[in-house]
Image 1 (tube, helix red, strand yellow):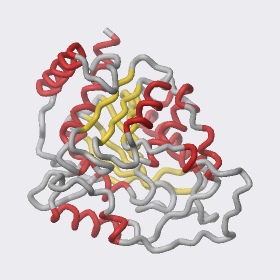
Image 2 (image 1 turned 135 degrees about the horizontal axis):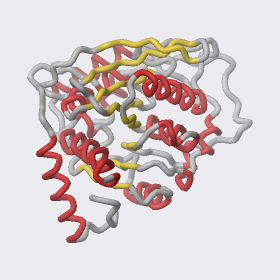
Image 3 (image 1 turned 180 degrees about the horizontal axis):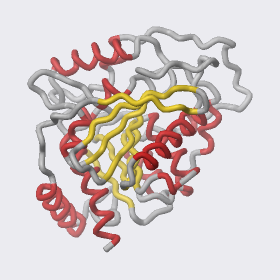
Image 4 (image 1 turned 135 degrees about the vertical axis):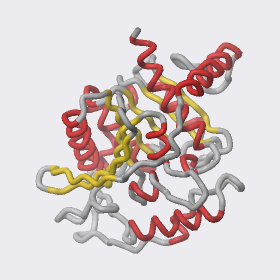
Length: 318
């Protein structure tokens, strides 16, 4: 959809625009079977080492940073490897011509907790901004940002604070609910982070649509998630989420919503989308998808929507 369409009612005009979009994507998408080497980068963030993973298409002319959600880190989320199944989100974006990087936030995956033992919304956004600045200095290509779930909230903080860091931002599974996420500034926290073990039940909890993903893939995800993140990361200073204000987003924005995502219901997405202060915005609902749609049957639709939205920016600039 060029510009944006009514998020509740898909009109005939919007439908034809969508057909044109899909046609453009099909022409531009040249798959390379996901034969990409996984690279590990270590980036200094004010004295703390952040681990960033990379997979890159040949002669990539655009790059994207992926931000994971609340519980699990980048590799299980974005580079899941399952025998005889193509589920790596990083591979899918590389197939579409991207240099793809994924940040492990503090305490997740390859990145250690800092000395405080805690992560805060402010710190997560500052770290993502540091990585984006490094990416732009490292490669002089268009830079884009993608956030899943909690990562989409971090992405919003990033673009609110410094829109110049990225050309577009994509929000997927956007869960922000002020009543749930914002707490009083004087909310007490334990002196020491609890650091509780993660569980297999939690790892499988986002897969709720029957038949959207194989049991083999769910099992592989659970195993990869628990191996990468055996201990749950602890957040504090949740009052910092109060900075989130969609009217302060001026970056071209793509909102992706799984049809059956319980954390991103339509009414909440509609409110968020309508407040984004940018006419260059799309809202795409992923039929049959839930909060883990990037690993399920809507995966291709999701990848094509991201590539289509970003490629459309070049058409608008002409």
